Image 1 (cartoon, rainbow, N blue to C red):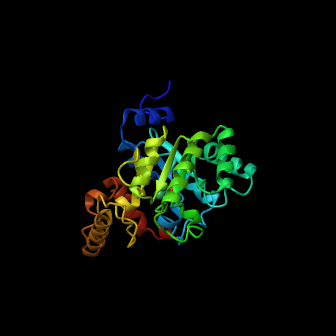
Image 2 (image 1 turned 45 degrees about the vertical axis):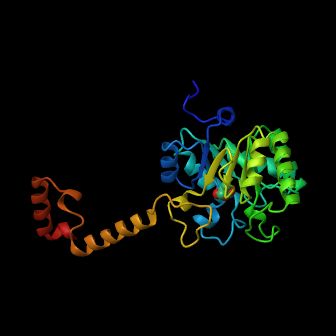
Length: 292
Ligand code: KIV
């Protein structure tokens, strides 16, 4: 029996039709995945932001398929309700169609993801071809347009995209191509809100904005950004919803102090022997052969 609480792709499309807002957050490990799932978020994305946020790489480019799968498997174990999407890392698609399909399939077969996300398509026939091939293999695809971090170098850096009329029109057309190809949704990253609004209006599949203003069907954020766990880098579009960094610092400081003062662990936080065994233990230590 399918779980009625489980988020499905038709369910997401229905929410867009009804005008209900959608939510997506990233997770790279079990504890965050569990909490995000329990909080009722629609989509959990194992983003390749993993590379920068959790693995300490300077960009998302070095992230490998093996790293993505390792983390996606851990996230899967914590998700029972949300739709789970694995992000295809740089050079896992676009090399050959066969490789694109094979790598996308690994997210479903090995990590238990429900779908994959693929960056690009705007001005890149290669990405569009890869998206079509993956969809043809029966794998649901979430598109990603605007600022595509894997190819930020080609875009001239981490800048807002589609700011000029011509590139804005190109973005809307690319989104329509992705919809026509069969994508079930599109992430719009760092584009002017007017462009995101117009794209959203022209599509029947949902858009998920990140730095794309309030008129998208849904919003997506890197969970570490909303918890203030991303160090000193705070993108303009990412709101801090909780200072978890401060809570962690406080708790760790208290642990250090309690250990220093000898107040941790307390008697209640330790184990004890039955008195008969304790007596025998002490007697045993007094016998020379027992300590040999
Ligand atoms: O990798 C990621 O986390 C993403 C989101 C920011 C959409 O692509």
